[in-house]
Structure formats: structure tokens, C-alpha cells
Amino acid sequence: MKERIAGFILMCAVVPMAVLGYLIICYVGFVGRVERGRSGVRALDHFVNAAVFNGYAWESISSHAWRERENKRWARFVVWVTDKFQQDHCRRANKREQPIVDLVLQKGLHKQTIK
Image (cartoon, rainbow, N blue to C red; front, side, top):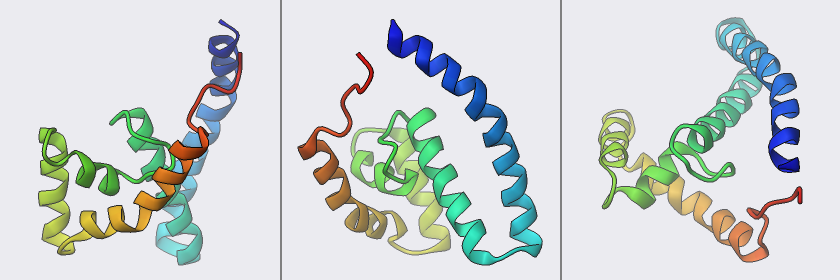
């Protein structure tokens, strides 16, 4: 129960900042430094992967889609779409991110922290 209460309080602060962050990403995408925009988009990618696709918070949608491509229709669609823009994007993302996923799982960093 403590975890749910802490999560609710945290989200009351994080969601407005996330909306602000999204607006900043849009602004920076047009007139700001590319590095700042890229970092913001990467963080948003990881957030959407965790919140929408029930993936790991430290993994991109592309890497997650590559892992799930055999079992999930949404993953096959993501792989198909990204291949239109960059061939083997999801495979390469997974190759780059899988060691991080393995390390986090091995160290138990994905487990509950508030008890």
C-alpha cells in the first residue's frame, strides 16, 4: 500500500513536469540543440515503452519490439515501420540494449524498492 501511495504522490509531481518536458522537446526539436532534443526523445521513448507497452523502463520501444516480435502483433508492426526508415533498426537497438537489460535483471534492479 505504501508503494501505491508514494507512486500517486510522485505522479502528481511528475506528470505536470512530463507535459512540460514534452513541450520543451517540441520547442528544442525546432530551434534548440540537437543533443538536448535527442536525450528528451530517448527518455520519452523509454517512458512510453514502460507505461504503454509494459516493457522495461531502461529499454527502448525498438529493442522491446525486437525481443517480442515472435509473440506480439504490436512488436511486428513496430519492426515493420522502423524498417521503412532504417533497415534493422530494432535488431540493432536490441543488440545495443540487451546487455543492459541482462545486467539490470541479474542485479535485481527491477524489483520493488518501497516496502
